[in-house]
Image (tube, rainbow, N blue to C red; front, top):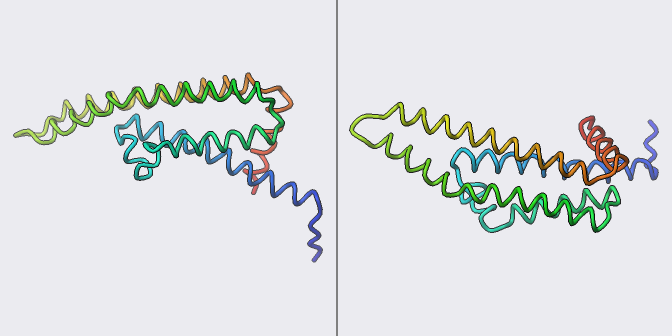
Length: 166
C-alpha cells in the first residue's frame, strides 16, 4: 500500500484543521445564540466561558485564522471584526430579556397552580428570540461574505467541502 505524504497531503491536513475551526466558530455562534435566546444565559454557557469573554476571544481567533487562510487584507479583517462586534452586542443586549423570561418561568412554576398559559407565552417568546438570533446570524454571515472577494469565498467553500468529506 502506497502512503506517500507529499506537500498536497500536508496542505490538505492544514486545510482540514482550518475548516474544523470554521465549523467550530459557526457551531459555537449558533450554540451561544440559541442558549442565550432560550434563557440559559451567558453564565451557563460553558460554565462562564462566554461571560469571561473567552467565547468571543475564541470566535475572533478562529475568524482570524480563516481570514489568514484566504489572504484577507487588514481592511477586510477590520470590516468583518465590526460585523462580529455588532452581532455580539446584539446578543449581550438580550441579557435583560433572558432574566425576565427566567423570572416569568419561575413565577409560572412556583404558584399555587402551574400557570401553563404563562409557560406557553415564555416558550413562544423564546422561539421569537431564537428566530431573531438566527436572522441576525444569517445576516452577519451574508455581510461577511460581501466583504470577501468571490475567490476568497470559493476558497472557504472548498475548505468547507473538503472538511465535510473527511
